[in-house]
Image (tube, rainbow, N blue to C red):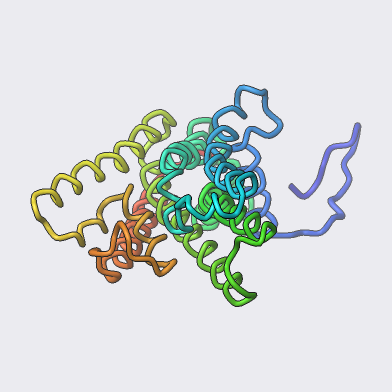
Length: 286
């Protein structure tokens, strides 16, 4: 807006004109607040805060074990590696993935807010970029935060990696794995959410895509199909990504790196193309 009504007249807008960047920043902040239930009643906060809290529970438990038990006893307990941590938070990842993008995209189309956004300096592309950034930031709360928290807690208890180089490498790997997972799952969820204006349909569709791909690919691998098919499994692919980024060879040692990279790139590109194509042809009333 360039002016605001004041009683019987108007006064020109004298603030800074932030343009497209300011509009994208406003959409990003508003989207994060909406998804987390900020400035909304308590009922809207239960699911997002609960999902984030679930992701931190294993890290808190592991840190508690190390801090409470004597060093000799703690050394005998085989705690999960940083790459394996994501096995413990699969449910939180799936839950948050199925919730965030439908909440941010479907609501705007169903309430008509999309038309208002597009009457600002934003176009469809910059609107989608802002929403994608918010979606992936929110998913990173689950995929990046807990492993980094566990790393920092272990460092404070002198149980972390050896030396500054080891700490920096583990921190970079944890952040890289978490961001990669957020990008892949966020892209898929955005692509599915762009196909409907009903949150329930998008949420169920995302959950079915993740769990359905897992069931299908697991059955095919048991029938001796190549392990590279993990690239098509939206539940195991993030775990394989984390393992490869951390340089570990445990659960997915037989899965080639090229398959993991191709799967991550393919799912990300597919989600982006679907969302972009859908919004380009979407009829919007301003």
